[in-house]
Image (cartoon, rainbow, N blue to C red; front, side, top):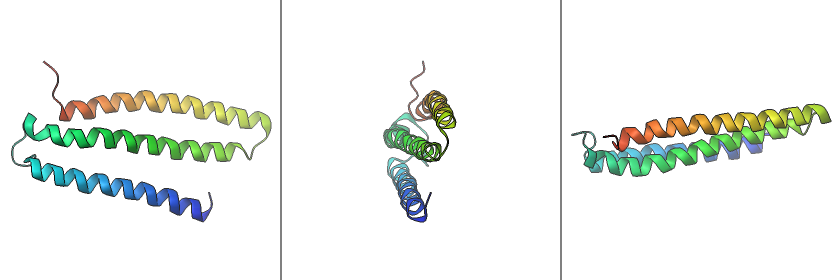
Amino acid sequence: MNHKEKKWIGGIGGLLALIFIVVSQIIKFQSGFFGARSFEASEPVGQWVVPCFIVLGLYLLGMINYRWLKAAWKKQSWLRWALISLDILFSFIYLWFGGLVLFVVAFTYFPFAP
């Protein structure tokens, strides 16, 4: 990637991460999450954390796919399609594993088990 692409992609990622950290700490403080760990305190935090977790995960997948596809277009025809196929396989594995991790994250903030 060239310098301008690195600045834009890194800047957007850093800004998203900073917004996530700051706002989640503000919500934790306002809801009393640090004082008493209860369902009433963790639910507002989870309503912010889960959607942001999905957005940050999809942003990371987009960055990875962008780099792999950009590298693939510079290769020979057979190697190009091999890299694209590998990228698709990686994306499926990433989304499957991300779903499992999303379940764990949601379970920590929304105690929906009996």
